Amino acid sequence: MGQEKIIVTVPEDMDFQKIIIDGTSGQKTLRDLKVESLKINLRDGGLALEKVKGNQLTMNISDAAWQLRDVTLSGHLKVTSNDGASVLKRVTAQSMDFASNDGATIFENLRLKERSKIVKKDGQLKMINSQWPGLNAEAEELYVNHVKKEFPYQTGNQEKALTVEVTDGSFYLINE
Image 1: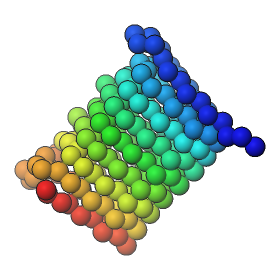
Image 2 (image 1 turned 135 degrees about the vertical axis):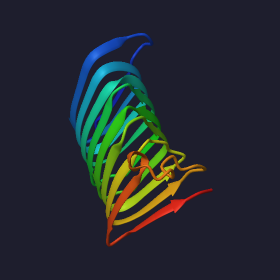
Image 3 (image 1 turned 90 degrees about the vertical axis):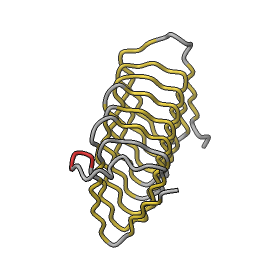
């Protein structure tokens, strides 16, 4: 049985109000895309979003590896991910709710403008050169590592505080 592979490349200056992707198995790649609202439900396979601009993105992913690269949102990013590695590189959003079970997660050059929440169980969470005004991270059976030259939440202000809950795991902040 062959694997489904979908690649969607949208000509520049083509805008969409809403895109919904429901899929099982195979690799899905969307690049060079402008969309007001993007909703993705994916089970099994892989997903890559590259050079995407829009307002909001909602993702519900199971048993799939996925990545967001060069994604700019003026609104909210909501991700629920089970059993799969994920990479968010050069992603900008107003705020984010991120929940993930199993699989390594890497945030690299993630920029958030409002307080956001990360819930991560089982796996590794690595944050490199990322900025946000506040973060609530809950970690269970997890290794967490944050790498950044300056931490934006060191002021002692609760609105800019890093709140971390860890159960049976480790949380590391590394200032390189």
